[in-house]
Image (tube, rainbow, N blue to C red; front, side, top):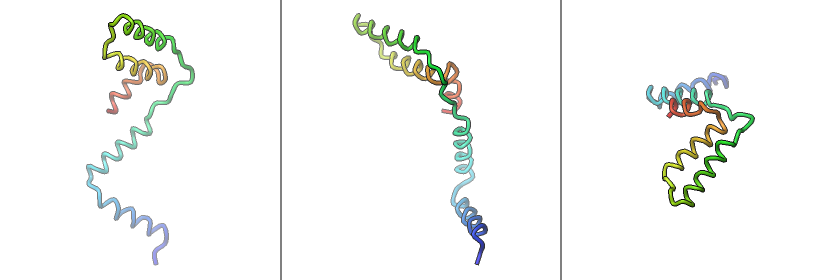
Length: 94
């Protein structure tokens, strides 16, 4: 009979053999990204988000709405909650 520690090690070794090196490397990269995940900032400044929302309402009222406003709002929301450099992290991890 094997010890619980030995059995666990044998199980892990057997399990790892079912994955290719490429799959294991992808999993390691994924886990590195999770450890490097940005944190939400503590104090939010909604001024630019409020202005952008008001500008979009004005554009709609003046029949000047642009479809790319959705992208601009998304970007502004992410910057509001994660800071101005959030897209450096997003772009380097996608």
